[in-house]
Image (cartoon, rainbow, N blue to C red):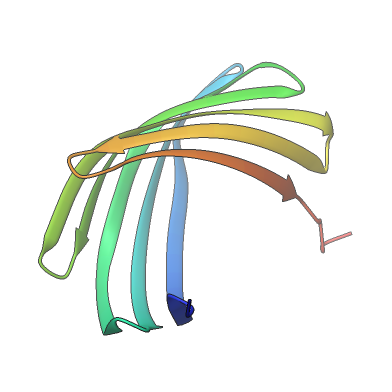
Length: 122
């Protein structure tokens, strides 16, 4: 059995902004432009597009974070509108683990992530 994906290249730029900050909650928006190239055993594909997110991020405690977003993706000839929900636990200020759920017209995704934050400005 051969491999399915041989190469994937993605270039992204993301702009992030806080619209409002209310104690432990804030409204968040992002804009991402992406250019991707995929080479697989089934053929090659490339494309570009953008994604807009708008939502709410909340930290009810110093080590727990929740967020909910609505998003719009437009890649090549494919447009999606979906919802995203996630929660994250911070055992330390630099490390977190999270669980997420995304749903749209075509796909539902459950994700598990680990993240390490490194402050290079120090």
